[in-house]
Length: 149
Image (cartoon, rainbow, N blue to C red):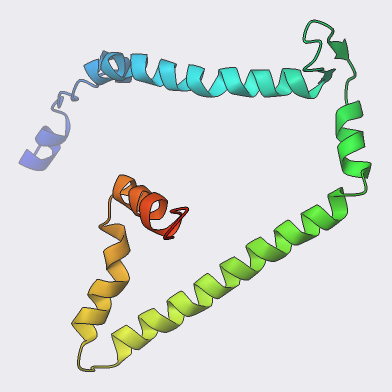
């Protein structure tokens, strides 16, 4: 028997595997995950409930179960096809324009060296630096002002 065969027969202790549930992070995160699930599931359940009943705002106690009748009324209505067409056209055109111009501007900035390239980059990224509250205040007080906007 040589040394190599003797080492092969030695028992090497396997590392002890911890269970995923033994990690205390699961217990620390679970209350917030439960609240987020509740925050999502309750409105979803209410939406599904209100979609299968006839709900009258003038008489809220008189709810009548109608099943899928609301969906057939919506899908067969005269305004559905023009509304869906306008929505898809608007979304498609905005997406196409955004992607095409974004790729063109990024290719232009990456490929060419021109004077003021850094300034143009800062101008393109600067809208991300503005906080949403500041942006909302600017829109409210400057652009949508009833007198001077």
